[in-house]
Length: 209
Length: 393
Image (cartoon, rainbow over all chains, first blue to last red; front, top):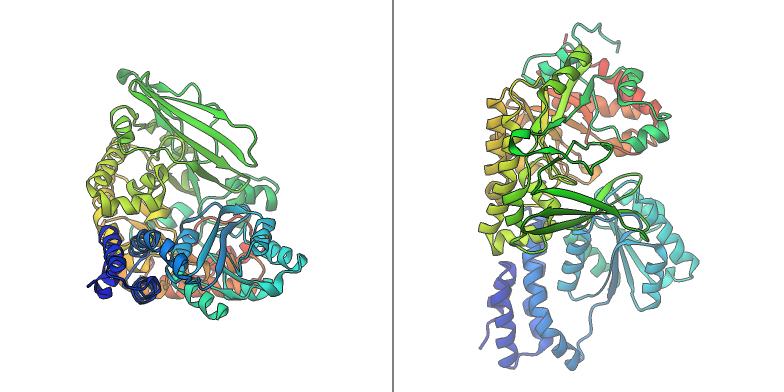
């Protein structure tokens, strides 16, 4: 019988090969896909986030853990659909118009996926109207990133575009990136600011619930 | 507080800080001056006019490259005018760089092709009025690095050109360069240069999946930089920049720094010292978990000490305590919040904070934490003026 503790450890250590084989064996053993996701994979990524916040893990450890988790999720996803397991919510994520720096954005996307969210990755250099379209397409959360002070104003432009489209009440807006602050989030009317990928998961989870 | 009479020239003042001697007052300078800023806020004045206008301690950037005809090298005939922070590329018949502007993109988009006898490499660079970035990375297959290893040219320093610049610049400030970067887009540090040739996430994954390949790539890049450094003998530079943005603790871990950054850049620093040159190690982003690892490589100075308010993590006082007696610290000033949209008194208070936390016993040069795009000239005036009041006498 597959021990979910082994699965958790393999994700925490970023062992992609072992993660995929443990997910396969857990399914073969008849474990519920939702149990594998929640008690194995999401629990592991929660621990990864904790280690990051404690300064024990850095971006590389998070990246390889998230990569292992994604490899496992690829096998698990069809079974989750079959079993009717729903994601926590759908997050449309991208760097704002003019900003091409995507390592932070990609890491946040992977961590959110690891926490049980469905991800619509809009990529880099995303204009406000694409975020608006994403809400119309079912995203409940807009997550925006900017690394440059010169592109930060496009966060405000996106918040305004969402308001003008009459969709502000249907969406939660989270922002982050090196020059971004809580004060800036307050100023432009975003719902939350996340200083790093782990915090992004925490605040998104709290806003969605 | 009054401005103390200066008893040192700008050059003497900054060299004193770099060499661990006490300056007359706090040296104050800035990092690269971006053309966007000079055009938008300063009517397009030159770097030197900027330093004169604000009475700041100046530097002049110069990285003149020389080709070696005895090795079959010649200046890249395709390069055209040398742009911002560019140097003259060196070609051979086995390493030719061709470029073409690609139409139909929102940003200026240029494809570069590196033609060698055994194949062609390519990368795409995009740019706007603020910055440039890689839109398509050069390394598409692992063995692409074989072409780099076999055919990529290594520039040498044009020592005479540097010394002419040093002679003309005199006591106005420092003559600053950087260790050579990859031909069309790169960074001075070996790891950081590699992160311009492939996506940094993929480079990080490769450190786990195929570390020997990463070392192979880093050795190729280091060899080229080493040739450049060895050619610096006799060049009257005051300081060279090494490092870059992709080896901060907000991108990599101390473990990766120890295994893949330090071994290569430490050797470059030792070679630079052997050639009579100083090195400042540039890290934009998180630094606190890496402070001792960087200082252990033996640079003369470290920068940028970016504070938490700008998305990094530096506690200037703690940094001073941990490495301040070993290297000169450059930076630490929060230009996002104190060079724009604040009162001059706030700017002055930020200068005092930096001086109090890092200025004790010298070995500190006040500077914004890296370059900036938007800044209020009146606040820059307050920044420079308050620094001149921070006296060591």
